[in-house]
Image 1 (cartoon, rainbow, N blue to C red):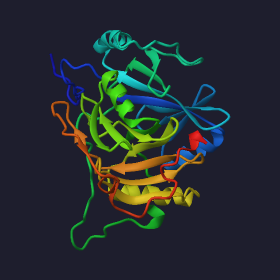
Image 2: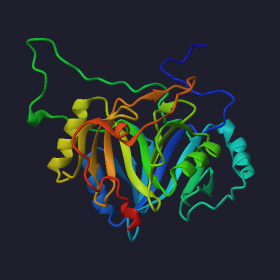
Image 3: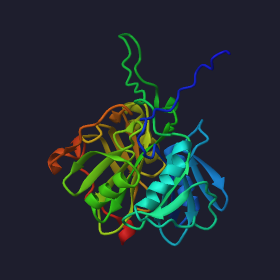
Image 4: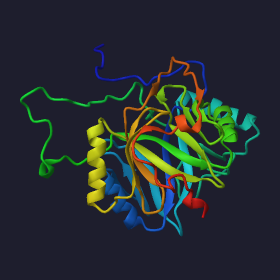
Length: 318
C-alpha cells in the first residue's frame, strides 16, 4: 500500500489521561454586530452560527469560539478536547472525583459531557481533533541581505490573520484551587506560577507553555484570548491594523517572561483583550517541564511599555 504523505500524527503521551486541547469557548456579548466588527478587524473569519457568530482562522474550518447575544459580556463555557479512546475513561474519571455531570446548555449540540469547575464555570469534555500544536510553531523573523529592501510600503502592508488560537487567561477566585482542579480532573500540568496570583498550565500531550492560565480575582471571567502569529513584525502590523480601525487601547509591543512570547494586547469593546502572540515556549509530549514559582517582578514581562492600570481588572465582576 502506498504511504500517505504529509500527515502528521497528533503527539501523545501514552498511558496518561489528560485533555489534549482547548477546543473552543463560548461568550455572550451585548452586541453581536460590534463583536463582528472587532474580530474581523483583528483578522479572524467571523461566520454566522445559528443565532450567533463563530470565530475561525482563515484556511481552517475549526471553530475556536462561539458568540451569542446577552445582557452583558460573559464567558459562558470552556470546551476541552480528548482523544476518542480516552473519552469513556475520562467520563468515569470525572464521575469518580465526585463531580456531578450536567446537561448541555440549551441550543448547543454536543458529543461530550458537562460539569462545573471549582468556580462554577461550565466545562465540556468532548472528542475532538487535537488543535494544540504537535511541535513548536514556526517563527520567521526575517532579515534580508544587504542591498535589498527589508519591508513593504504602507499601502502594500499585508492583512494580518492569526494562524490559530493559542491560549486563554481566565479569572479565578483562588489560583491554587484552580491548579488543583484542572490538574486532578483534566490532567493539565503546571508550567509556572507567581505566588497565588497567577498560574500557567499546559497539556500533557504536547502544547504551548500554556493552553490556559489563571489570574486571581473576586469572580470568574475572561481576561484574554491569545492568537498565534509567525513573527514580531506581524504583531506590530496587527497592532497598526487594529489602531487604524479605531481599536487603539491595549498594551504592547513587549515580551513576556513566563511563556517567553512576544505580545500586543488589543482591548475589546467589553474590557477584556485579544492578544497577538508569537514564539511562545513549547512543552513536548515526552518532556517533563520543570515548573518555577517566580516573584512578581520576574513574572510579568522582560521589556515593553508599562501595562495599563486596569490591565488585570475583571470587568465581568463589576
